Image (cartoon, rainbow, N blue to C red; front, top):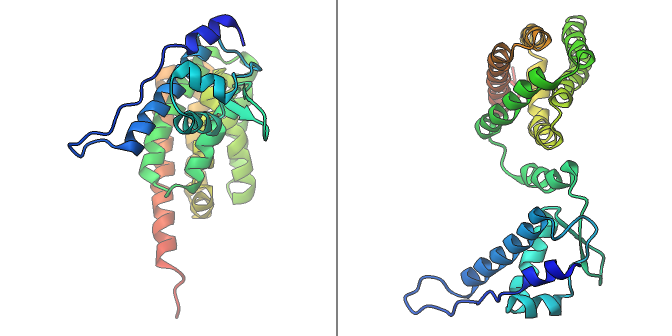
Length: 262
C-alpha cells in the first residue's frame, strides 16, 4: 500500500459517546462509524490511492490510523466484502478486488434473490436501467451489432408456438441490446433485473398470444435501433416493458388461484 494511501487513512474517526436522551446508543453509533470507514476506503479507491490488487494494512494498523476500535472496523470491512469491493482469505489481509462489473453486481444479485419479489419495483427499476441501455445502443452499437439485434427479433416469429425456444431467444435478444450499449456495469445490472422473477414469466410466456405480442414489439424496437432512432426505440421498449409487467402480474394472479378442481 502506498504512503499516500496510508496517509489518507489517518485522521481519527472519533466514536460518539452514548446519549442520555434516548436517541442513538452503542449499536447505532457504531454503525455510523463503520459507514464512515467504508466511505473513507471507497474514496481512496475512487481517487486511485487504492487500486485492484492492493492489500489493506492489518486490522491493528487500521484501528490506529482511524482511531477506532476493532468492531466497527470489522463491520466496515465485512460490508465492503459483501459489496465485492474487498476480498479476504482466511487469516489473511483484505485485498482490493478487480472491481469488475460482474463482481460488483454479485451482492446485488444475492440481495434480490432473497428479497420478497415485488413486480412493480422490479419494472420501475428496469425502466431506469433498460431504457438507458436502449438509448446507448442506438448511439454506440456497430452495424454488425444492430444487424444481429434485428435478426434475433425477426427470428422470434419462428418460435411463437414454442415457449421454451422463445425464452432462449429472448435472452439472446436482450443481451445483444445490452452489449450494443457498451456499458458493462449497466448491462450486468440489467441481467440481474431480467433474471428476477423468471419463474413467473415462464408461466406468462405459455399464455396464448403473449409471445406473438412480444415478438412484434421486439421487431419494432430493433427497427428503431437499426435506424439509430433513439426516441422511437426507447418508446417501443417502454411499451414492451409494460407488456412484460402486465403479463407477469397476470401470471402471479393465476398462480395464486391454484389449480381448479372439478
